[in-house]
Length: 396
Ligand code: LMR
Image (cartoon, rainbow, N blue to C red; front, top):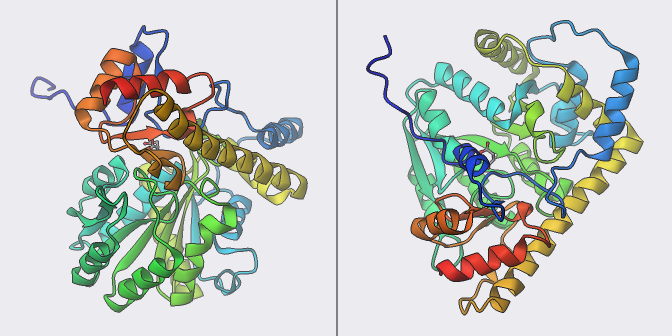
């Protein structure tokens, strides 16, 4: 049966973890996967999460099946966070939200639903995009193409080219956009540029699918979510996938969501019924723990405040690491200007290093980043940064 099965390539991001774990180099540093580590190189368990977990353990709740669309209080908390607690579209019942297995799960539920709804559509992702966007939408059955995004020369976004590609896209094309903290480049478009994008998407009748995996890692929770309000104001129907993997440091709990903004309450009810079929036929219904933790934190004012402070702490430490990396590279003798690292936003820096240089970093120094040149700034700390800077200096 399996004689003809080929060996699949490693996943370009998670596959690096496997290689990293197997590497005996004691100096190794994992800047591959997008995970935040504290200054001691430890994965934090946030205090707000610990407090919520204590409450949940004390309550000794039974573990029945959850509803197919997840915990109602969780879905409501997600909606409040994404659209704003006073949002008119929420009051009007125009948003269908389902709990999902991380942000990836949200994307996949949306992709499978869209495939039924628009079987002949194509998908546009940014060039470059999160490595899994292309694979995920391809495996959902869509042809996936890209719109220009990264400007290697100017270290920024090829905005006019991006807009041009969207203007040229056939009506009904699904456009995947990073709501904040673009992965992998770290370059964002401005609010005024978002306005142009929203206008074009609407005028061309394109289908926006916003991936919001890093809310709070850019400039703040509200600031990073601001673009959602532009889409709401446009009156368009659109998709938003949410992840709490990074913002709650709950990677392994797979806590995410998909929200679909519809034109009416009636439409939202019908869309929700279809999303439930997608979920039921994939994994039946979601798990309990992580979503309970997130809902408890978001709904308990003292815990929510704690979360916002802890998230701000992560955000600020990443910014410090950006500045420190620039300084350390200069101190290591690098002539090239790396000040662009400070203008990038979120967990990542698109370093501009070539695939060959990234592979040398890995094989000669045990410094793991993605072949595309992406490094996770959130995994740098005051203990490993000298070594990382010196290693980069050597491969340059
Ligand atoms: C990343 O881009 O590294 C993260 O989103 C983790 C993942 O699943 O790839």
